[in-house]
Image (cartoon, rainbow, N blue to C red; front, side, top):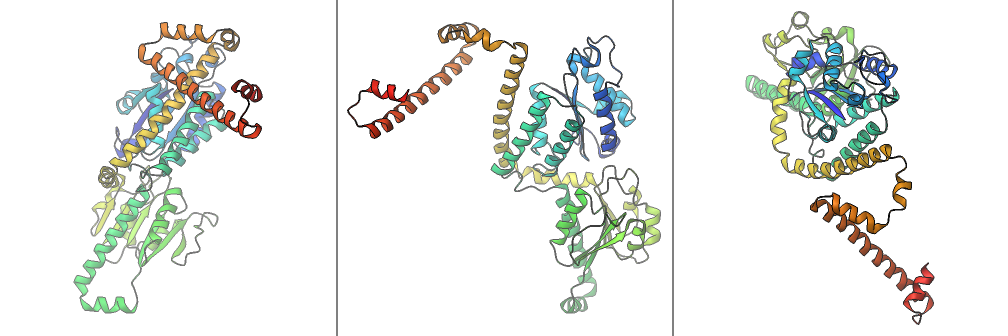
Length: 450
């Protein structure tokens, strides 16, 4: 398997924005790949099919990474599979291929499989251990499977990666202590509102305290993109605190946030600027390719002078950068969230070590499965060929061909299997004697077992 990766480790937020590939574009690529409609090296033997094989592909694109996982590409596009996929990615995002190569990391074979496992388990995330990536990898894999662009190898690898991530999630504290982009964004809101409350108290003195005792003051958060995956998670986090009401935008009646919580009010997306005046926080998390908040319209909508927080965690960005330059306004972006995430990640090193142990175990398993599958594919009559081979002959063959460490490992497995079988036969023999009396010989016992 090969992998081309552009992520928060190699690219800035603006560069990742350019590399983001929508679901529609991904599906279009997969359909072209399935039909063999993508231009290829005409000297490749067997054409698109590569002698009956089809290039398998999974395309993963999130706010923090764009990656292509491919299988069989070297057998089909013999000159340079990495270069071929980089050209496809450059064409998808409308950039020069050299620009892509400057940002991309390449992985092949076991390293590519390990990278996928690390990504799926949240070890490569901006926020280590975050849960969203597991669902994003699953969705990307299912999309490719549905399009007919996965085969035995990709199915085996991705299913093993998803299984490994679930094991890490249940057996380590990596996800249990997880702080996702959504929760970090919510924490920024909480921090801003707490600081604003302290500032108001200092400005208003005892009158403010007396008014709060009679009726707690609710802070208003306008959430643009509330029904998306990230937006709904943020709304859930915000509602965990008292004193916050949410104005949730919706583009249609079907798109309204179905919460039932009296602290949520659905408003029309088209009227979003009408609510900037009352909002203390404006947060945007849409999947729109267009700007949802411009500085000019925001300034015109806000009549009252007060501190406001703008939070933009969309990819591509939803908000005009000039919003952060407006008086009494602060803009928090994904790059700001990244700095907070790095501090959070430093606290997770013990859980990360535990997760790595599980990952290596699961990686070893899947690599052995793939190795054996490759052997059976190249040797379809292996059972007939090796069925007549005696154990003695096979052991001598392994002794002569393997290095000492590998041969010792083989003997260790056989010895362990032999001891397990002896223990099993002994247990069965004791049970047989208990049922039939103790006067029978050992041979009679084995005869009875047989």
